[in-house]
Every structure is written in C-alpha cells, then in structure tokens.
Image 1 (cartoon, rainbow, N blue to C red):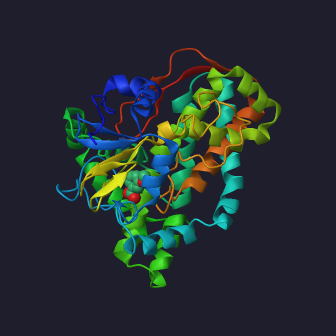
Image 2: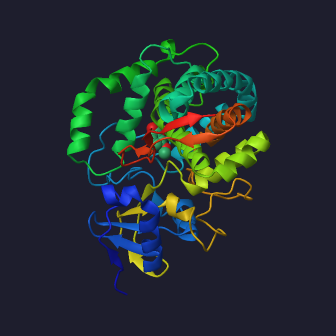
Length: 392
Ligand code: OVM
C-alpha cells in the first residue's frame, strides 16, 4: 500500500490561522497521513487518535512529547519524568501526581479560587473595555495556580515565558524559537530554583510532592522534577483554554445568554470549549517497533502526531461538530489527551475554567468583541495574545 502524503504544514501560519479547515482536508485523505514537510505521520480522527494514544506499548512517550525525536537527537532539557517516559517508570511518578491531585485538594481550593475570580471579574466589569486575555484569561491562572503550588509572587511572568519555551520546543526548531530561547536562557534557572523544597510555600501542592519523597515514594530529585512539570504545563495551557472558551462564548451570544441564565452550565461550557477549540491541538508519540495503523505500515522510531483538535471535530464521533453548544452531552472529549498520559492536571484546569467562566456569567450581562482576537504563535499550544472586548 502506498502511503497517503500531504504537503500541509501544521506549524505554518496558514495552517494555524484555520486548523479546522486543514483537519477536514486531512480527515478526507484517510486515517493516516504522511506529512512530507516534516517527515512525520499524523492521525486526525477521534478513533485513531484514541487508538494511538492508548497503545503505550507501541506508541511511546520516551521519544518526546513534541516533534523532536529523542531516539535520534538530544532533548533541549532533561526530559519530563512523567510526560516523556513509559511504564513502568511512568506508573510510579504518575501515581504520586494522581495521589497529590486528589478530589479533596480541589474541594479545598475551590472557595479561594471563587473569591479571586469574583474580584477579577468585577474589576474587569468596572473597566468595561478590557483585553480578555490580559484582564481575565491570563490574570486568573497566573494568580491561582502558583498560589496553589506554593510559588512566590515575585517574577511570576517567568512562568509564562517558560511555558512558551516548553511548548515552543514541541515544534520544529526554527529562527523564532532559537532567538526566543537565547533571549530567555536565564528563565530555566529561575524555574528550577522555584522547584526546590525550601522555595515552596508550606501547605502547597509543591510541598505535597516533597512529602511523597519523605515517604520514600520518589527521590528528592524526582520531586523537584515533578514540580517542574507543574511549572511547565500548568499555566499557559489553562490561560489558553480559558481564553478560547471566552472567545467562543463572545462569538456566540445565544450560547452566552444560556450561560447567563444558568451559570451552573459553566463546567459543561468549559468542557465543550475544550472539544471545540482545545489549547492542546496535538501531541506526539514515537513508535518503539514497526507497526500498522488502519493498514498503514509505520516503521520503528517514527513520530506520529495526534491531532486532538481534529478529534474534537470528527463528524464520525460528534453530531454537528463545528457547533459550539454548551448544553451538549460532552462525555469523552479528548482535548486533554487520553490513556495513561491523559493530562494529569485536567481536574485543576476544569476547576479554574469552571470558576472563572461562572464568575463571568454571574456578573456580566453580555460579552462584546470590539476587535479581532489575535492568536499567539506558539507551535505547541493554541491560544490568544489579545482579545479586545467590552463587558456589559
Ligand atoms: C512536563 C510537561 C511539559 C509540557 C507538557 C506536558 C502535555 C508535560 O514537563 O511534564 O504535558
């Protein structure tokens, strides 16, 4: 069987301007496509994404979460000990994280999050004319997330810069990325310093990771690395998800009216936004051996890009996939990934998203976009840089 190839480049400005048109094109080509611009495979249907992401014995994470292939090239930083490892190593670190991120922790965090969200939304409302990114979707996670982990106040912008480095490294290393890394070389040091035991506030989630080290479940070095995971993947992701949810709501006044009438729809609205326009559009696996997907032979140590963003729009799985419907029965969306590597912080993200969106719904009569939202150009995440809006 000859392989199906495409010249689409998922990292190009054109693709990123409208990924959903490109996904439709890819889905029409068949279940597995070779992207000749990058010499990688991709899958873009719900069923094949699910299959690839669930089969960790063949589709490994040890080759790196981005396009870089750690089986042939050196990683830009020490690989993550949870994202970029396979079982059995993964099982141990993941269970430490799962135990720390318990339902009880989120129950305890909720009231504080609600208070912060209410305050930020009322300040934004008083301003009237806002940047939805700066005043809401960036401001809220950048406060509550480091507060919860136990990272000090000073210099928190470094979290956004580091997130941009980490997710930027998921894409091909181009000029933008090289200059960005050179400009921010010291940010990694800032982050690693904040991952140390004595820098993390008592009672926070960071300290809870070190308590697992005290119990002998992991080493101190591993605890440091797991805190690094929080500071790598915990901020930009939620900033972008909340921003995209606000954008979807602002673009669909009918949907916002439903939410305004019943703010308890906030959690479902955020879940639907994660299907409709996830901040994580793609994630990579690397084959450990020769294999086959839907009849397509794939060699050993090849990269496979799973388009989560396309899985969310697959008409074989979703009715009216291109319609943003906050009342949709949304079980099973894979915007957080799926399988053993499915986002470990997803309950954190859902809590942040629900609480902020709900606070908006409770206070704001109507959202009005006053300019075109601008996307930022990070290869690993989809999100906004600017969203001029008026709150009524
Ligand atoms: C990590 C990490 C970094 C980026 C993304 C991610 C999607 C994890 O450091 O563990 O998960």
